[in-house]
Length: 133
Image 1 (cartoon, rainbow, N blue to C red):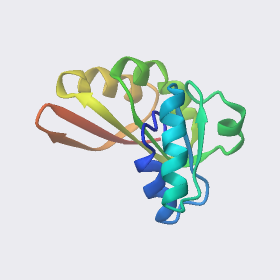
Image 2: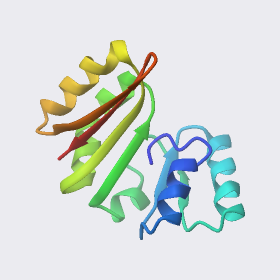
Image 3: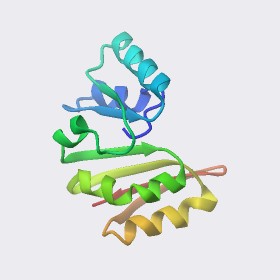
């Protein structure tokens, strides 16, 4: 989980059977809160203060079946190679936190790196992209 915030997505993944769950955020307060939330919810999820996927603990657990990122459009594009590189072939990436106006920009970066669009979800001004490596 890239941009873990409160940890809710990573906690849900851990509680529904994912074996290895790692969440990262650039905000140390978010990491602390995510850790507390995981403890309260008895979820086996680790949270790290890190930018991107370069942290050794994140690299060690690769390849991932699923990566979800709820961060801004520009970092999603900048991290597209790292994110797709962290996925196993056939793995899924879910990109959220996008405005509809940013969807084409982000989608193009991932498609150019070999991902294929599986689906998109739109709600009001927001978009979520689901892609497969």
